[in-house]
Image 1 (cartoon, rainbow, N blue to C red):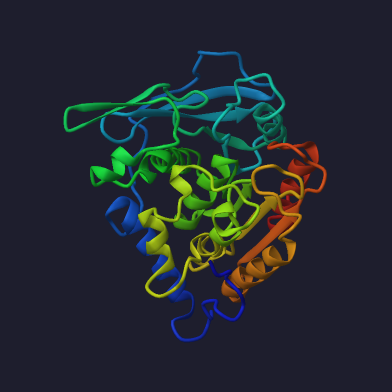
Image 2: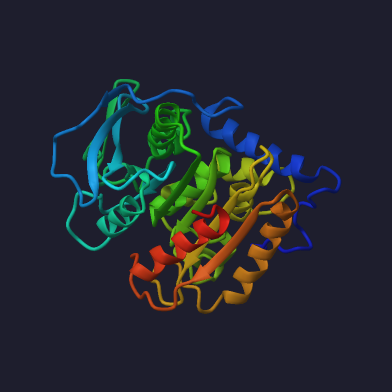
Length: 346
């Protein structure tokens, strides 16, 4: 598989330019939603001052949001309000597969409490069948129930003619719609880890309202996966290169640059406001280890940056050389916060 390089990038400002990149966004949206715009729907049920659990440290109250997804399936997200003075910003935090911010381990609560303490209002989300989402998740297609205990295979959704990406993305899109309408933040950001990192860059690629996004240990280009002889994990069903959304975002004759195009779209500043995307990898992180492919990463990040920089966009990556697990640490969160502050000073 080829790697996106400065030689084969979209030439921003040249023939087609940024419009050619934005055309790929429209194609991506079309492939998933069947329309040329993102859904404008919101959660079907919203419960303010939700009392179903103990509040995280630094949280004044929680609004619970419930979503109808596809084929009778449901999902949940939450909007958390800080005890600290609101800084006017909204951040979406996606915890990925295995945890949510209700747990007492060192993963999501560390990030949740970190950003609440900074004064953010936080939208919290998890992967299907994980965290506070229903598990098992039963989808009924043509009167046949399909019971999912993990999110590793939604092929039955694709086979029924609906993009399985909706199962992952619709709750987040609806939560953002609701939060922006009701909170009117000055800026909206999003980050996630693992499958949550994948979700973060997929949503940010389609939604220019997200001006800063961060993908932690959530993806690598297909050319760097085990299937292509690289170190990166092949990952779960939704990330495979056979998914229709990847063909759409690549475009005709583009080669497999699917993830590189996603990264570029996270920084495409075609709506007037500059945008930034941060990819975090780690030399010894076990899912997408970077130590043997640093030069290749530098190459595709430079190509993505070249696609968006003339309009004020920026793509960068940061290598956490200390982490040896698939998890945050305090240094990671400080790097994210410093990147936000360098972009939008507080």
